[in-house]
Length: 477
Ligand code: BG6
View 1: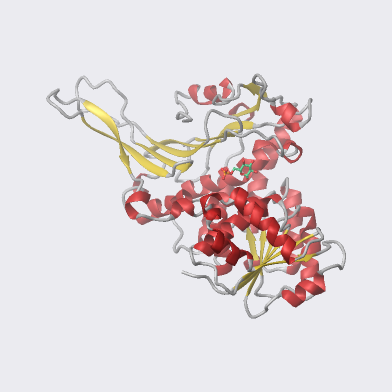
View 2: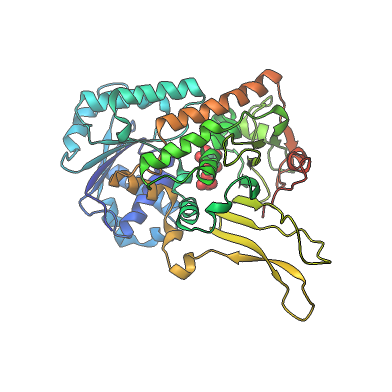
């Protein structure tokens, strides 16, 4: 279904994110017929380019990052014709009147701030001074949304000077992933799971986001963030919210975000012995984290594992184990809900521990399996065996979801004016409120990350985190 006619201005339109994700994503939406022919994408950046120069740049970017679709040359040319460019000076006056001239005020206007957060204020101010944005405009902002509570508050306050919360779309691209949305459908669209979704029936929950890539190329940014700020404070936290939140009374932006906020506020502080930080070691010719980061004395973590709890009636006493890291064994993101053991087995001789386990894979292959116990088929008597009940229906339903990247889904939501999958300001602040003391704790202790082998599952201490409690992480595969 096509969205309304729009003008989308991408500040930082020549930057990495625009080239890798935003523009190829928009092209895919164009191909699917979702982007009206009259809509326009206006790249805005410092570089001195004209429309033709920008179009060439975007064509190259899509050829490089657009996958198979980029081969669709005729369509690509038609898409490219919808692009424009304006050179703007974020801190000066250059280009703003031109931008004002270009905007069609009768269409939906969205401004994507794909720039360093330090420029948000300058851009927002000029969009108003030059009467480019009005009360219906939308502004899209990217992480990092602050590096602690104070800076996040400052950013929120800066945006709030010029825009209403209803106009601000804070992107966490994890919320745009297909399975993340499916998680809500499965939880709140079935009667089956909800009654069991609590501390009476759930033993523990695990959230893993494992990556094989290192930080090479982004070392300078990453070394100031580390896995906690780069991944946990946003992506893993959002996953945790969706797993743990109460059912909103209706699936709308504020109802969903109110429930997520309650989860974040109920998160328990993390004890120092419940955190394991790691850094990947050198492996043959493959540089170590410190070499990639260009900082020989870096204490920044490229891996983190931790255990936390949610202090509310539903979850009290249920551990949530989170882990994420770079240069691990495989690219695999998974949420695992491990249900409790049966109180009593009626099958004599059955010594195995049978547990219902719901595994939700976000990537690389999206899917959901529920492990259930059945009788082993055949004449062997009442022998029990665990089998996965596959709930991956994408193929059966012939969805085109493989091709919908999180970014393009979210950008279309911006145009539609749907904030459900975007973070509200108070959510971001609450997330920092939980994160800050954890980081301050290890800084005060002078905590040194443990080295781990590239291609492993992280430092051994991360395994111990669960072993100590008689549990085991699921395999990263
Ligand atoms: C980004 C982080 O937000 O998410 C990166 O800054 C990380 O460090 C990336 O690699 C992971 O995203 P995805 O979609 O590939 O899992």
